[in-house]
Length: 368
Image (cartoon, rainbow, N blue to C red; front, side):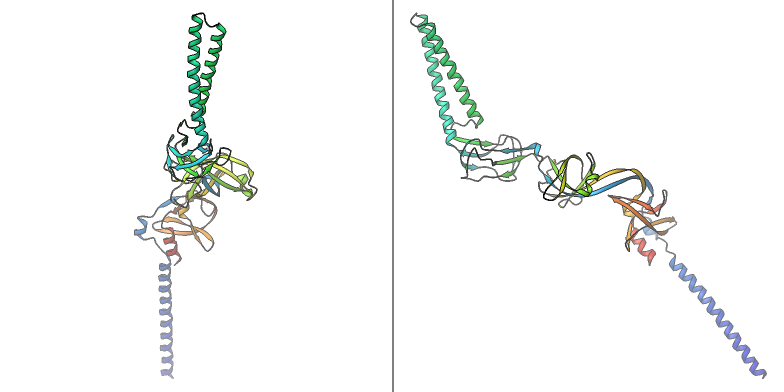
């Protein structure tokens, strides 16, 4: 009996010891788990990490429009034929740069031959009228002609001078060529943006089609489309930023300088115009553009760098920095994003410090 009691005591002691060891093990495991869950940003990331301060900024609204590059029609010239004839020598091609006075094409024209003939006739008539006037003056001095004869000769001479002046002006308007050719010259410097003739093309002066169109592309128009739902959001003078497929990393800036207050009947959009400087000719007519129109609201909002935003599971987050390598994941409500700024309505307050770079990397580490 005594031996049995002793065995029970030993068994109880072993059971108590086991329970104590199990409790110690669980405590250690919990401590280790807690240590694993507490993530500190490594020094290698801290050295290059940017810490931003939450600010309060004027709230800016923005809408995105589609558009295209167009010629500046105020700096564009359409060249029409002044005479009929056949195109003999086209010297330029579409896209060529030309200077004012440069020959674009030559036209063989019977009208130009007629103008040359008129010039010869007018010069001959003037010489005859001049000699007749001199002869009448000599006869008048000798008493063989009357004053009426001199006056009549003077009148004929004056008419011959006027006729010659008229013929010269007509010839000058039509290129001043006396060989029967009509020479088409560039009235301004710029680029050939339209070309509607080739060699041996027959042209007529009464045809309404232009032969060439020249445009100075040093500044261009951006024509943007505004749908009915956005008409109230665009105003004269609103600043815009413009990007193109050709130059995705280049941003062009300007302002709305004209609103066409009618809707296009085919696509039901209103056009707005932006004039842009284009000294390097980067913008080509008919390029597609993305136009972002911004206008400032009469209210303020919390704003942060858009680089600090993290989008995950259909929500936005930021990392609020506590110092000494500690950061907390914080859910935020985004009002709007524009360029490098994001406007928030909830989640952080002015003065909070947030992680402005390496945010995705740190966010993944905190979640894991």
